[in-house]
Image (cartoon, rainbow, N blue to C red; front, side, top):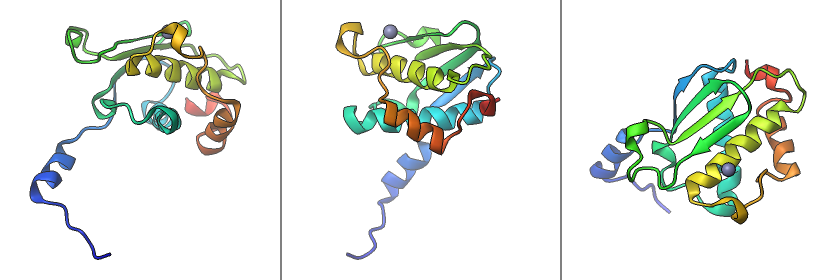
Length: 146
Ligand SMILES: [Zn+2]
């Protein structure tokens, strides 16, 4: 196979494409590190669900607080006024398992972004081997995200 050069129009499209964004973060965790973690969680969920169609436009807000989240589906229809598609509230727990809580919470809200409702998916969507992979590839402990 020879090298295939993309057409000018598709090049323009790829330049204009934006990545998933954490548009606001007032948690104790670093935006860059959370983004890396969320990127891997999406990758793992996408192995089963396929890529979230609006992944590149997903706008996430993270704040400091009790472990909770909210997410919209569909993302764009009628919800633009909020300015975000997923809202996560994360505390600064030094709990050794909090990394997996953050990952599971993001995965949970992401399932809502896919359009699933509660009876349709497991509360903690990630499998134990996927949590292990996250710990290998991102970090062992949530303290390292700070
Ligand atoms: Zn839920």
